[in-house]
Structures are given as structure tokens and as C-alpha cells.
Image 1 (cartoon, rainbow, N blue to C red):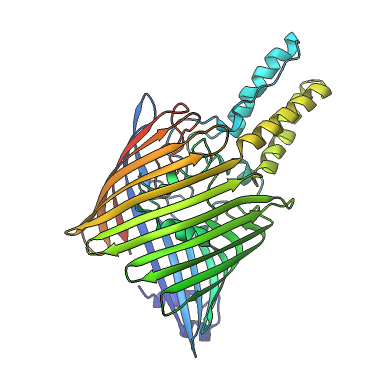
Image 2 (image 1 turned 90 degrees about the vertical axis):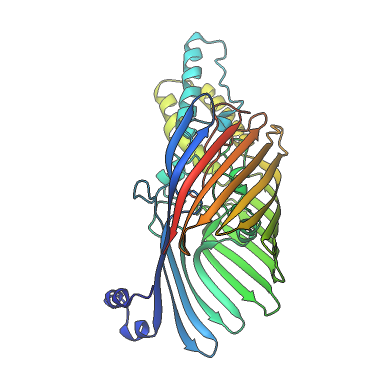
Length: 448
């Protein structure tokens, strides 16, 4: 809706002539429901915010300057309906141990060091591995000022200029490869059938397979009358999803016409030390005909040098290592344990995987049936593949409000601990590596 009152209030901060020519809109999504899930021995029932869509509050506006030129902006804030906060967490209560897999601190035959070695491993697990309602990849990043910090507009913060030859946008935005990925997801990156629920590292929440957004990004976009669209993105220092990339480059090309909405996308991050970080190549989309809409997608992910490694190394040096030194652990032993920690974490953070997803939507009256099958092929030595199936039904009560229900199942292999999640919350972990996960979700979504 157009808010003249909002424009009047904002007039205290901005020049009145600009606002007089602007069109400001407030919009949002409020989505919440109940998830019944089994990730181990005990069944759990939880209220979850943002199952089908992440709940949000947004502001967007345009200023038509004539001659094909328009100034635009978009601010979008995360809203967790179940708590009223803007910070999401895991759905599962279980803790994953993929990050410390294979980690062992030798005691060198010393009875004194034997106890210290066991306590150190336990301390590392408690410090670095995610517990309930904590994001593994952000815990230490948050404490040290990097990455998403719960800022008001962490979903989108963008200003741009539309011209007769394309648009130039600047700020925090969705990445080009994610745009293609989302368009190939039958469940539109939400519910227990979301393709993104199984892409990434072996632990279920260890290493992301996609930079969904990028900070400090500059993007050029163009859309042609024949249905072809393209974009190029460049991220400056402190870009990428958690703001730790030295630079970020991405691009996509897609075709949207004659029932097709398909494309290819590419994201590549560069770490502060110049090494290559996460590389994601994505292809796919959808095809609509009659009451059917078919989806297919393929993604290759590789990350040999996680941008989070320096953060975890810093955590060891300043907290765990410092405590061991203060406790009197000999310098040679501390050096050996430090090397083991760094080597093991670096190995476990590596990502090398491919994934595909196939599915369809079928319109039935005021609703639609959705079903998909997704598969993650882990190419690391862990070989922790995962398969996910889901079926759901979404019923429109009106143009703005719908009710939905979905059933999903993940079959993990070897060290995989993927659990079923939602649009705004990771599923977290199964109780044990290789364990299966099941979930039923029932919820309501309202758009305004």
C-alpha cells in the first residue's frame, strides 16, 4: 500500500521535493506453523516462523525521472513471528560433530596430559559445534564483528538506477546463482521440500553450498524484450554472504518466455588471503504448461578454502589455546595440538559436491500439489550423500492468504546429518551421522 504518512515522516530526514516525486510501498510476509519432526529417537513438535517463506517487513520505492530513468530502493528486514526477533536458528535440538570429525589430541604417554587431551577435545566440540538455536557458521563470526549481525535490513538493502540500457544496483542483494537456484526449486526455497536443505557440507549445517546474498555488491541487470535477462555482480572487500570475502564475482543469464523460466548462474568468492573460496555453478528452472509446472536443477559446489577458517583459528588461539597455555600445557604439546586442530578443521570444512532436484506443481482448484526429489552427491572422502523427497499441498484462502502442509524425508549416508528445515531456519542435525529425518509441516502465510 502507498503510505503518504510514511513519506511525511521520512520528510524530516530527506528533502521534500524528492519525496514528492516518490512512490513508497510497505509490504511483507507473515508466515508461521507447526513442525512435527523425527531426527532421532525422540519426536519433536515445534512452532516455526517462516516455513514456506521467510517472514519479513519491507520498504521499496521508485522515483520516475522521465526518459526511461528511475531511481529505486529496497529495504527488507527479517521478522521471526514466533518470537518477534530478527534472528533465526536451528529447528533440531541435536548437535552435530562434523567439524571435529577425526580430531584427536595425543597425550604423548603422559598421564597428566591424558586428561587434558580428553577435556580439550570436549571443549573444542562445545565451543565450535552448533547447539540448539545457534548457527554453526555464524557463532564466532558474530562475536568478532563479521557476517550477518542481526542488522535490521539483513535480507535486502539496495539502492539503484534504472536506465534505458539496464539497471545498476548497489548494496546487499541476492546473488545471481541463487536466483537461478531458487527458480529451479519446486518448493521455492521453503518448506521441508526445499532443495537447499541438503546442499552444502556433510554435517547438515557445516559448509554452505550457496552464497544466497552478498554484502557490498554492485550489480548490473538487463532484461530484453525477447525474454532474455542477464546480470553481473561484483562484491568489494567484506562482501559475500557473511561479509568476509575480499571480493565476490557472479553472473547469470536466463530466458523467460513461452512457458520457460530457465537459466545458468555462477558465484565465486575470493578470501582475504587471495585464495579461492566457495564456487557455485547452477543451471535449471521451470516449464509451465496448462495446470502443470515442471522443475529441474543441477548445481556443482566446491570450497577448498573456507572463509571461516581464520575465524575458527582465531577462536582456538584466543580462547582454547590461551586457556591451555595458562593451565601449563608444555609449548611443544600446545604447538602439536594447534596443528592438529587447524589441519582437521580445514579438512572437514572442504566442500566438493554436486546436486540435482526434480519436481512438479499441479494446480487443483484454489490450490496446488507440490512434489520433488533432490539428491546431494558428496565427492569428499566422507561420501556423505543425501536424498530428499517431499510432497505438499498449498491452498489459497484468498489472494493474500494461504494454508499449506508438507511431508518430507531425508536419507543420510555415512557422516551426513541433514535434518529438514524451513525457509528461514536450518533443519540443523539428526541425532547421529547417517540417521534419517522426517517431518510434517502445517502452516499459514499472509502477504500484505
